[in-house]
Image (cartoon, rainbow, N blue to C red; front, side, top):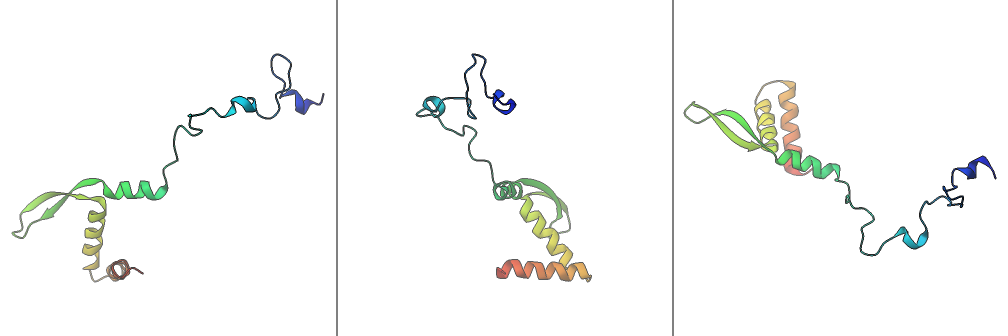
Length: 105
């Protein structure tokens, strides 16, 4: 017997082949073959991250500092809008990015 085949010999000396179980017991009725379920996709993780709530510091219409609870996505959009109001290259790029998102490009 070749050394490659020895690794498929069970303790009782029978040849087991590549699969350790027999075909009759490999799939049991009513039992999931993937008990952990389908792995979460990157998009789902990304959407969950953007939906999380965070506290942001803001100023109300009277100039009084306040704390608000918003989603991460809303905080990112507010940050981009604030950046867009600055007369810098980054501000111009932020305006272009917002326009592409709004237009759906």
